[in-house]
Image 1: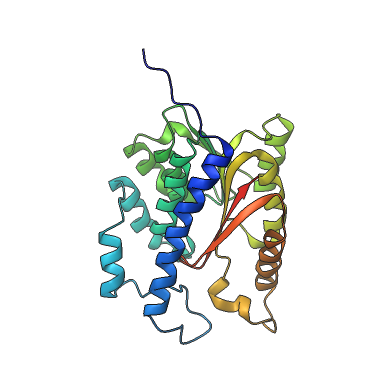
Image 2: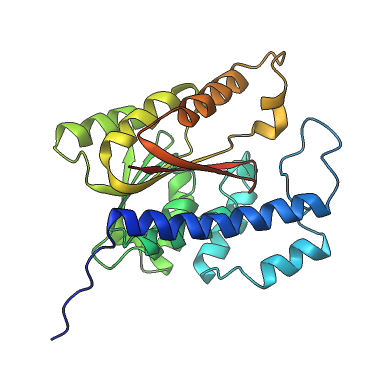
Length: 262
């Protein structure tokens, strides 16, 4: 009987991850150079408009989206604030990184309809587990039928309570250093606290992802009177100077920071 493959060592995983991220960053940089800069301060993405021929070509040659995941993305975009979800490119990159490091346990802060939770669940083995946090019980129920359709519902552990409470419960239960992937896509007010707790829960070589780190380009404007902008800018500086992680900030969607725990 064949033996299960061992997990990739931390140095090997980081090397492979760095190579993959380098390719992703180069793609984003090239596309950014081929397209004009945003015309105003509220542009969502640094990449070409989604209806541009170049962007359509990029998607048609890279995106592999499970039918249930595609349906859930369409459903989510129809909801108020639906555009704040992970983009399909971000979700696919995170899923591929989860596969690369042979992830078994994931954290997902900010369930919404469960698009990112489902993307991660699809990347985990049959015994995998995604702990996902949401304060609005109604939103995940929109996505639950599609979790079921994808036959991944059993992997998704929904916690309807404040994310900090869930993270503290996991730490108290002795789960520090046991998670492989964490996505911090909840309220920005607590993102620094989420970051610290998730880092405790991740194993060495684990991946911590933070989307919306460019905040529609507002991070470039120190005079902006927006508390969320200040929080995002502060978190970006914190991660940059954090010697506990290797980082990449990718120009995907509204910006995506990936921090690899050392």
